[in-house]
Amino acid sequence: MAKILDIVTHPTPSLNEKSKEVDLSILKDKDFQELVSDMALTMTKKDGVGLAAPQIGKNIRMIVINTKDGKITMINPVIKKKSWRTDVDEEGCLSLPGIFCKIKRPKNVVCKYVDPNGDEVLIDAKGFMARVIQHEIDHLDGILTIDRERMQKKK
Ligand SMILES: [Zn+2]
Image 1 (cartoon, rainbow, N blue to C red):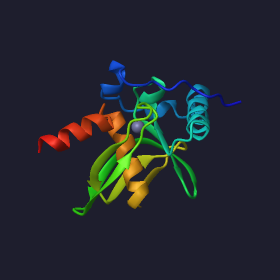
Image 2: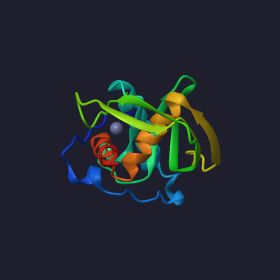
Image 3: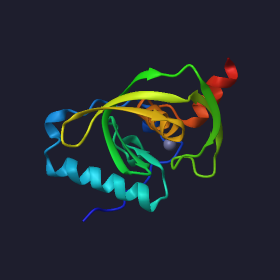
Image 4: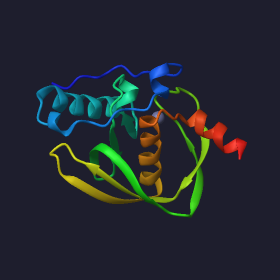
């Protein structure tokens, strides 16, 4: 049975660390598969649209996102292409309860990742989904919305 994991909240130093790539040889491990289901359940129960592994205390490059077509687990996600068009929207974060930041991001992204079966997938994400993916990948690079907002203001 999947369990609900504790969410790591700001300020916690590990949230600002760059996470390590997942070694694909662990995909078949029971512990890893449990982690995938636990993260999906945690995201659902906490009403998140996405969750990155550092938010549950594991600094590995894995995220789960909730889309209208169901939950997607992305292992070692990489953004391959970004649109030059951007938009600005308010983003919340389970690690920053009650804090909303206006973040400017590319509108569309092409993202490559490995699914839990070990298959490589390329997706063309637009609008809200593109925003969620970028937000979660930021977590893997140790960047929170408050950091992004600060970076934007400096420009
Ligand atoms: Zn977040």
